[in-house]
Amino acid sequence: MSSFRTIFDSYNWQETTTSIYTKTTQDVKAALHRSRRTLEDFKALISPAAAPFLEDMAQLSHTLTKKRFGNTIQMYAPLYLSNECQNICTYCGFSLDNDMPRKTLTGAEILKEIAILKAMNYDHVLLVTGEATKTVGMTYFENAFKVIRPHFANISMEVQPLEQEEYQYLIQLGLHTVLVYQETYHQEQYKKHHPKGKKSNFYYRLDTPDRLGKAGIYKIGLGCLIGLEDWRTDSFYTALHLDYLEKTYWQTKYSVSFPRLRPFSGGFVPEVVISDKELVQLICAWRIFNEEVELSISTRESNQFRNHIIKLGITSMSAGSKTNPGGYAVESQSLEQFEISDERSPQEIANMLQQQGYEAIWKDWDKTWMGAE
Image (cartoon, rainbow, N blue to C red; front, side, top):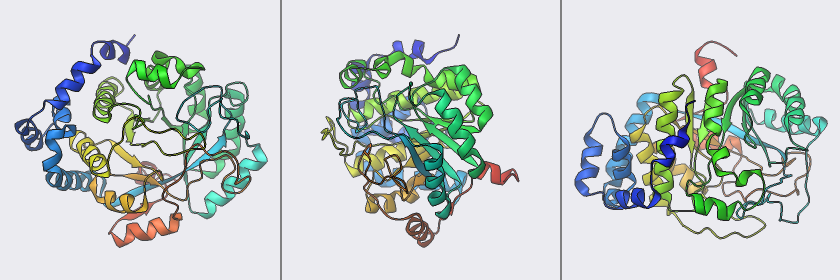
């Protein structure tokens, strides 16, 4: 059976890191001038050697994004259903060892949240939970989908990894996209930051996109949590993962997100810091490497950063987000997963996009193009 694990095990973290940091100016120039880029080109584009070429990268990224996606930004909103979690994750507000009030929304409470999101014009929702299979497992998801499905054209999920058969069942209920971040591809660091719970199983999480591909999911979202390990090396492994998935499950679409660690109630301090300039470099490198992949930015980032990154490769963003269950209408004070930075309303974001010559898209663009509602 096909699995990314075989490819992953053939790579060495330190050798990969050395390869990235020894890329030269000539490697960067060659990557910028090719019509199709390889994984070695991606290494060059995320390397320190590419820093002086940031303006060239930004212009090329803008051109490639506009050619493929036009002047549109897909809008989505997270809907946090539960902050209950059985895992200990050192960086997350939902961690089991964080002694805070827990909340799981009922069907009636979900409807109250939906009413607020629909009033904001959203038709694309991302369902988020902690990883607590006993309270927020398949039975809960099945009931939640029955409540949510009539109200949204596009339903995504960011929950605990599931089995292939479970994904297949949820697809029948209306599941469109699943986001599953490896957090870090560095196995020792992964173990350090995930000491307890099912999430501590590195390979089970690594195999999740394979299970999704075999289940026939429409879109898979990848990413690493920037701040746990060297961001360049983690990003290369993400690109390696995507490259494998696109070749193996070629009918599936893909997206990449760039979550930077943000403060939460437990106060975790990132082990690695990426500057705004470096994050711009990373986003542009992704677009130059892969012209088809969707690139997403969340409200973790500041107003100013999000305003400026619009034209440099991003294709989807959230706005008006609440990262706690019931945050829109039911229970505004329940435990947040992380602090929001950009607190502007969806309408304010739509106005900002319009001022830059972009259009906020509230429906799923693929379905819109196909003439479906």
